[in-house]
Length: 81
Image (cartoon, rainbow, N blue to C red; front, side):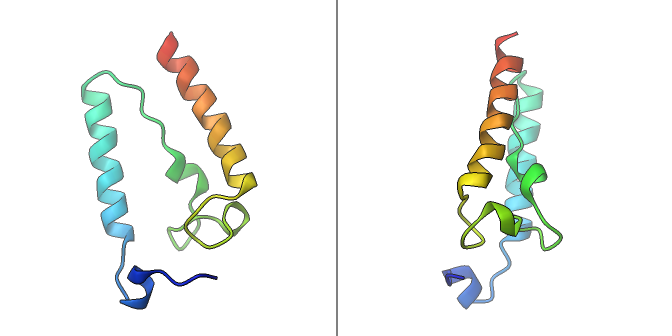
């Protein structure tokens, strides 16, 4: 697994990411926009990407993009209704 600055510095990005996701979701819902939530579908018990969806714990692999593309298609169809 690769090393990233937040790991090396023992930073905990999960609360920041969770808060940002909540802000984006709240904004979308308040303004009538479709909200696409990749995170909830791909997160593991560590609150990171499931191993089967990432080569390095951060970036999606082919399986991860397959999940994301299916979610994106559903969100696009919802937005177009």
